[in-house]
Length: 166
Image 1: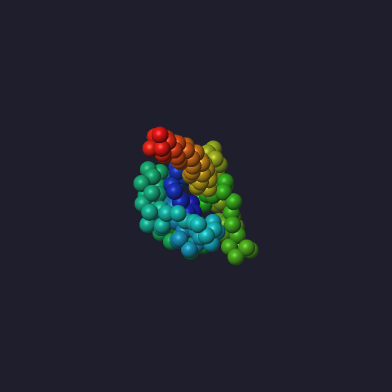
Image 2: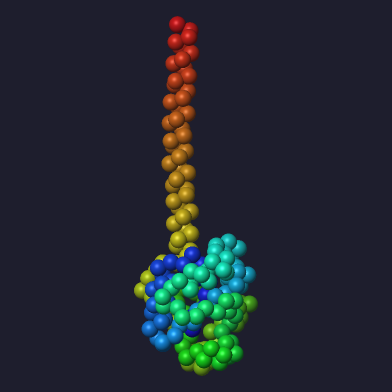
């Protein structure tokens, strides 16, 4: 079992899910609701809504089942209901619920918790940073082009005025 936001599904998610799938014969992925993701990732997240994130995860060949609206804290009821043998988390930092409660306390107590390193450092935040960086570069490039176009237009206007005067 793994749980998370899986926002802007990317190769880092894919590598993590592939690695997690190798720890058992059936991979269940819990997806947190939009308000829950917002509470631990911040005001601009999630970028994709829960429905879009579910469809992205379901399309992954390593995933057998999705729990929509999974609890942030992995509970005994969840583990027992789905007969979960292993709970995995990747390298992203674990946010404590209400700043105090470890969401993986129950699986850790049962000694079924594993930290997985997918070997891939791609994150949703890196994708967002890349988009912002490219947008800023695009704006700078277009401002330079606009400046040249304005200068060319003004030069053409001056040339026309000179021709009329002469």
